[in-house]
Length: 193
Image (cartoon, rainbow, N blue to C red; front, side):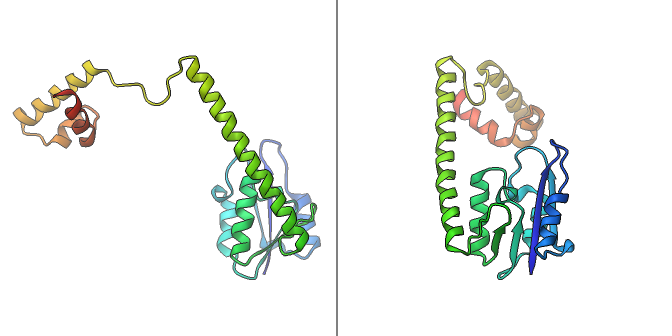
């Protein structure tokens, strides 16, 4: 079976007429075209149109897209998705950029894209780490702020009193302080030594 997929951005107020016409021109039935209109950078698997299409695709099917970047929002997402599809026996073809992983040239293009995707991933990691280092140098604290030991000790006393004097279970007493049972035991081991 031959399927088509279109993706447009709500942010740019685009519609997929151009993509649909191109898919129809190469023989994709309009009933076999799945679409998403999204804004932001949602991954392929989180899109409803893509998920419906992916559920229908089987070994031997062909997926045609207007341009390869319609499959994902980043090169990494595109490579991951195309690789997963080809491993399932699904042929992927892109109309405007000529990428067809079932051909020698298409595999070359896909491998080049994979190389660039890896490069992009490493650049992103470097930028994130550089940003974290700069923030730490400025004194920015990451993660949850440490709990106030006075407030923790007060809550522990309240929970212990509810358990000892009122017969509540630890879980019930902890819940009165908006804690879980595990939080109670974690702090009990640290504070009440």
